[in-house]
Length: 491
Image 1 (cartoon, rainbow, N blue to C red):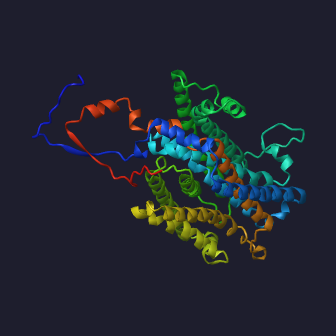
Image 2: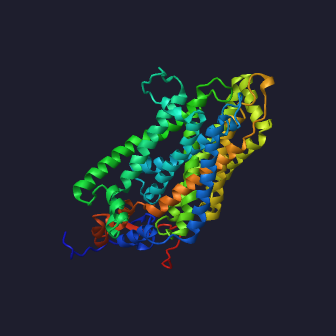
Image 3: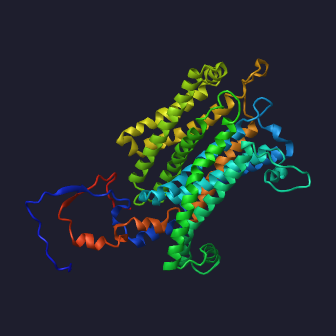
């Protein structure tokens, strides 16, 4: 049909109102604006608040992780608060906590990519980075929990002169393979998605060391058709490979507990319960770090309230699943008639650790319920408060599972009250500083938003965009979508 053809609407023909899609990028931003805004974070000087966060984080990481682990290696693993009865204390609590945080990155990148959810494009890069840094923090605990860190390589199935061979029946060894595989695939997936953006930064840099390094890591990317074709195939395959890892890694971590005979642990609900909890806590951490970054760097046009509301809905969904799992644990303990199982859960609720159980239920089950209301999902202060509560609640969940179970087992003579040592506390606080340090360095040296994929969500990226504007659909009438925030060109 020629472009000068005039089409008149039939007044007798019914017109169906069709609501437009809500905009993922506000203010009709151009390709150039997106590139300039994201690359400007790297190329311009960092704001003062970045340094106010970075310097304390580095100091906390050096003192907490460096000092705490040096003291542990030089003195012995007994400096942790663990004992013969509570052989797993804060170290394993923190390990499972950090592994759980690392799940949202792969979920956003892989599963939402396979389901073609375009809203993921503004947050997937930061979520993937969060995954890498959280797994780095998590890996510290099992490595040093073995005591002799210089012997940790015996965990790998490598022939050695001591004829030591791994016990492949132990879920603790399954953790080694699951977590290392998850970290490797996540790192490759994260790096592969950055290659086109690294090439963009390389081409904008002046000759020197910075351009040389970006040139190396961009792998000679030139943006040709053949390169894009191979890139999309590789990205799709890695997404398909990463998807089962989201479900398998935390399931394997839950097997550390579920395959035991300890009352309160020996249950089949742990694998799906742990996966839902990991996604729940991971999305809360994504919002915790991205809402401040959105404000500091002026990314309101790229990370809109649509993204925040979608993640809030996922937190509500997974939080409800976690709450159901909590109640089902109590029901199974009651309905099974097993007196030791019932006693374990009664001890959790009414024992000396009742405050931890109350904190877990309040933060993980009650606080996300405010997201049923649109006003709460669109109020950033409420979203941040709920996310901080969920972060605390997920730590208390792991504390309740481990610490409220082990101190009171079969023999009353062994019943004790667990207290973490100062080394436990210092090391955990140090991992928080390490996580923030790595994430702040990521914001400074790497593009925190996927430049290429964000551009794909713009209307002009559709090859038929001009045709849709020139030729109206005679059977429909577009209605403006509800936009979460008003378009504002003031910034």
